[in-house]
Amino acid sequence: MQYIQPRPPSSIVAALYTARDLGCDLAILHGPSGCSFKHARLLEEDGLRVLTTSLGDNEFIFGGGQEALERVLQYAEETFAPTRIAVIGTCVSMIIGEDMEAAIRDSEITTPPAIAMDIHAGFRENIDGVMAALRPAADAGWISEEELGRQKRLLDGANAVERARGAACKPYIEPSRGDLKHVVAGRLLECIRAGKKGMVIMNAKKETAYMFADVLVAVHASSPDADMQYYANLSDLGLAKVRRDAKNIRDGLKAQGIDPVMTGGAG
Image (tube, rainbow, N blue to C red; front, side, top):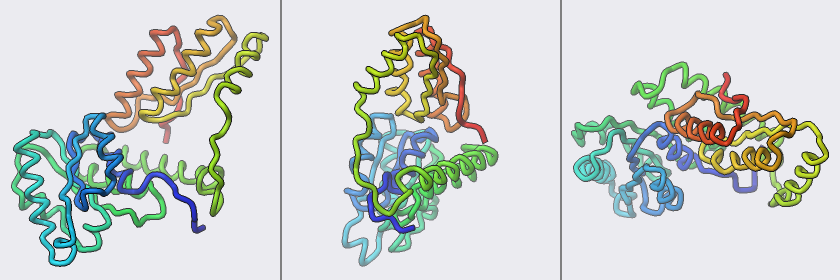
């Protein structure tokens, strides 16, 4: 099926977020300075410093991209002393045939390990950006082959759900804001106060779980004695940052008297 609606995020952005989740503290986008600008700057709030080789028309036409990448790698090591670097490709680096692994090798950086994520935005599925990040990470020993396989199964499953019921189920889907939160919350309180049994299921993942964990806290605070079962997608599996976030949220829930059943992450 060909989709004629935008679908988030691009595979380059997906690779950036995966680099963060792998524990990289510095990423270099090998392309124009404006590529993935918004996400790159937002990720700095998560501790991932993002640099760019700022390729321009000179490099597009006459070459020189590898030298630019070598210079940025050297600058990154000297200035920021990173512990783990990801060099992430873009459409430009793919089109002009950049060898990012050669640039890493020829830059002669010595302090941090660095891997090349050979990616561009021309894939139909954004999970390709995630896999382009995870495969070299597994080759470098940052994650196990078992974890790589588990991630691949989960991503394939997520794609199947998106095609069946999500943003890829039709060629075009009208934008929608969904249900109004205050209406849903009001109906939920009515059910709780009527003594009905219920389940609170948090299926959010990664950093979005911080926001949706508040729903569990609010339901529990509104009626601590209600007959409620709590479930949360916070199992202790996954990439480094995902596990750390899950633990933070689990600890916060337990401090509020909530001990949810752990779900998610199987495979």
